[in-house]
Image 1 (cartoon, rainbow, N blue to C red):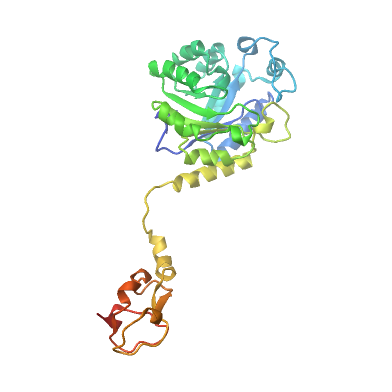
Image 2 (cartoon, helix red, strand yellow):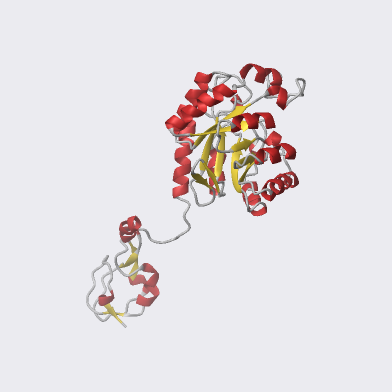
Length: 341
């Protein structure tokens, strides 16, 4: 269990749903504010942004994957939010009652975010193996949520051990860093395997599929956190466009998750609302022909029909061979008073 801004997150708690705004604001503070507003209206628990200091984060010339139309360094120089913009977004989030979360992509970015009194640090998959930075960030005393895309189990364990050793309140998200992933690569049951291997961490799911189905499945497998990329308009260009859902879909995701949570009980019983249906839907024993008083009741004289308010049909073997206690008409619901042994 970890606590994020007074909200308990972990097993037995409602799934903590993070709307990942990433860089889909394209550098516009107004767009970022609107994304926070829409995340709140959709019912998400938190909205997450990213704090990039490109020169602290990377060299200018690094290889790019297919989802980038321009070098990432140049993209971030154009569109990364400033610390002052992050401050304004956080203040807005506090006003409307949604938790502001932000991913630092360097120790310097984490240090700046710490001045905003952020409640948690979200670590992206690319930084998951950067143990020196993670250890330093953990020293700021905040819970950490770490994505695990592109990583082996051994690499995840190394990070887990380093942070748990330092008593860091920790969550780890199963993740596939494809944009978007093929479904065969998602491997949702890794969630249950991570829960087994890393018992002191809260386990969740960071989803890069372009829809919401795998998120629903993740909840049934025990994911305590969901992170999903969001965008105001799917026509907006950018590196995360192909893996983002709009806010109508986010609302459907939240609604679906809450319904799934309500349905995840394990007690099998006859519920009060089932009883009225059970009374007419189950089968009872009825006569298939008129039976005279004193006749021995044979199998061909009785069968099962609705409603279920008479002798249950599963007791038919107990009726066969008994004697009719009175004349019984055809197509009549049999009662125990109608027969004697």
